[in-house]
Image 1 (cartoon, rainbow, N blue to C red):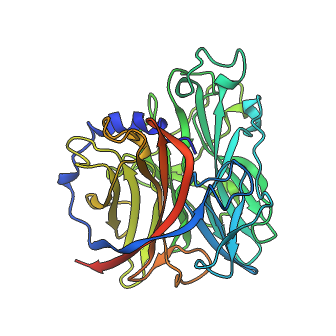
Image 2 (spheres, rainbow, N blue to C red):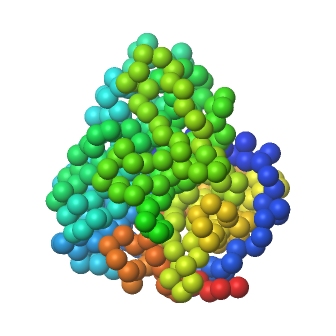
Length: 389
C-alpha cells in the first residue's frame, strides 16, 4: 500500500500539532525480546510478483484455521492451523480492477481490517486507492501524490475469508467531494487499523490527510455489527455521530460532519489490541522523525483506557520508515521497517484483538531502491514483552 508519500502530508502537519509531552506516559511498558523470525519472503514464497508485504498484518480464526492478510492489492492470504505455521494460498480472496471510473471504488483495493463473527462470516474494511494520473484527462498532473484519492470500503466473506464481496452501502468513509476536487495533494480516508471489541461495539481507526473543515490524523470509528456496513459512525469529539456517504451517489459536494482525530498519533494506526491483564488498550504505529514530536524514526506505542484519550507516544523500535525511506539521506539503498501489528498466538476469540504478556510484533523489512521502497520485502515477527509500569 503506497502510504509512504501520502504520510508526508501528515508528517508536516504533525510537526505543529499538540506536543506529545503534554500527555501522560503510557500505562504499559513494551519492549522487544529476541531476534526476528521470518514469516514470508517476497523473493521465495510468492505466487506472483505482486505478492509482497504491503499492509499491516491482519488475522482471524476461521473454521479451517488462521487466515492472515498482509500482502498487496491482489489479496492472497497466508493460511495455516495457527500463527506459527502460515503459508501463502495462491487463490485471490479480493482482486483489484484498477478501474478508470472512480465511482466504482475499484482502484487498488487492500484488505486492511477484519472481524470474524464466526468461522465463516467475516467483515472487512478495505483501503481503496484511485490514481487519476493513470488515466488521460483525469488529473491536472502526472504526479501520483497530486492525483491520489482514497476511500474506505466494506466487504464481507461468507466462506471463511476465501472470497470477499462488497457490502451495501459500500463506502464506510470518504471525502465529501469527488476525486477531481482539490487535486495536487492526497485526499480522502485510508489505512484502517484492525478492529477491536469494547463493550457492545467494535472499533477501528481510519486516517485522513484532511481538508478545509476536516483535521488531519486518525479518527476512531465504531459499529455494533461490522456485517452491517451502514452502522459505522465516526467520533466527532463528543459522540459517535459522523456518518460518511459516497460522493459519487450525490450530484454536488455533500454536507458532512467532520471527525475528531486523536491527538497522539499523527499517522495511521497500525495495531490496536486490549491487554488482557488489566483491559488497557495499546496502539502501535510508525512515524518518521518529527521535531518536538517523534525524536527518532521508528515504531511507537501509546495506551488508553477507553480508546478516546491516549497517552503520550513511547518508542518501541527505532529504524528508518517508509515515510522517509532515506532517513534524511542516510539510508540510500538501505532497509526500512513498515506496517507494524501486534498479534498474540494465544489471543482469546477469533479476532486477535487482545494480547497477553508476550505477543509478537509483526512488520515488513523493505529494501530501498535508492530512496524508494522496493519489492524485496520480508514479513517478520519479534517477541514483545508487555508489563504494567
